[in-house]
Amino acid sequence: MSSVKQDGSETDPSKAQTGDSKHSLRAWLYLLKCSKKLDQIMSARLRQSYGSSLSRFDVLAHLDLAGDAGLSTSALAAKLLASRGNITRLLDRMEHDGLVFRNQHSSDRRVQNICLSRAGAELFRQMAPDHERWTHEILSVLKPVEQEELVRLLKTVRERLEEEQG
Image (cartoon, rainbow, N blue to C red; front, side, top):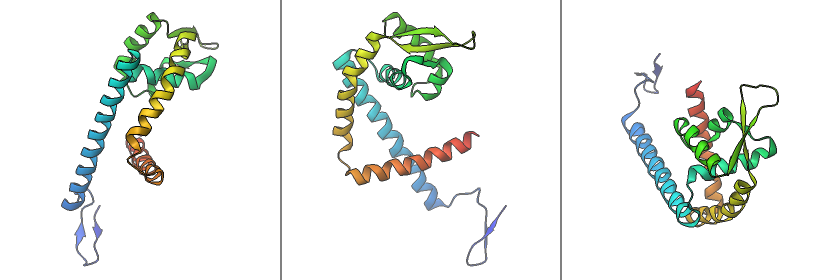
């Protein structure tokens, strides 16, 4: 389907304008580079301070929010930053280290909920303030109003990505 420009010529919306596509590509590259660098910095700090990873911190954070009921493996996997392929191994290692445990789901015997152990909750309580401080140190280059604008813009992009997935 084509549309008509102000000068009367037709455009094909499936073909991005060169200038617009260059802006989009540049934005995507900076977003990707920032994301990768943030991940590297946070992972290094968590590893150095706690012998842990950002993926473990992410699991602990989601389980802390979930409360005593925990989350099913699939619900947890959908929320995590880590790839789904690594979730089972990650949870197995965390269970082995005493940070999480598995509970049979109350109404579906095929489902196990992942729950935070006391040791996992304690580790998260230690890590969370440092994680927050480190995040603030990194992002304080932007004023609070700029951070809010960044969040608003990223939410818009995320909504588009979720629409794309169907």
